[in-house]
Length: 321
Image 1 (cartoon, rainbow, N blue to C red):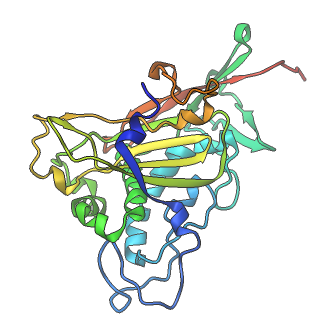
Image 2 (tube, rainbow, N blue to C red; image 1 turned 120 degrees about the horizontal axis):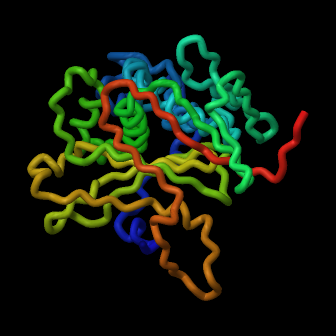
């Protein structure tokens, strides 16, 4: 895989940098999602372009009414249940503090708790000894994160909402069906046919840390050619060392595309570039994608899921009390 693959095919068109402290009271506004104006609805809430569950931030806008803010806010519980364990482990401060992770628990069980103190995770397993094990040979503590239940498609919708918030009004005109999809209840859309897979890619930095989260929206540079379909818009979200990548579904250009006749292709955002030491006088380097720390999720699930994830921590020594 070449580092330039993604950037050869996509270009940055918007980011949260464009929304620093944008929210202003007392001006005429139009909601970019429902098209209602200040004369038809209220704009009292401060809408964050990227939810503060990813980290404390002041990226706000003037183009989201209170009704739409409440409507789309219903995805945030699932999004928080999905992402919060990672934020606890890396010590990412959200709206008020670094979240304390409490695991999903069974009957007559107490939750395993993880609290980040001074940048280091502290574990309280109680009687849940099966949640962790020591690999003494490799000096590693393996912890099973039992996430609270979440609905995968709501996690994806929460991220799509971030992408649409970054869109210009002109670009958003290509995604009216996407707005409808976000607005409706999932049980009303049982037979929805998606133009692209609801794929979530998660990777990480090992040398870079974003104390303040950020989001960037990328647009495909070239038009569709042949029988390969590459999505028009790609969203990348950073938080701490974490990088999340999705593609925005239901672009107007796919209305006349038969998914069975086209091959979907995606390109991984090269977050790992920040961790590569380039040889002197060398601008390109070949990397094996199988060596990258990449987790891929299919998020097209409408029911709550119980997800366990094994995380390994290296240690130098064990101190017995």
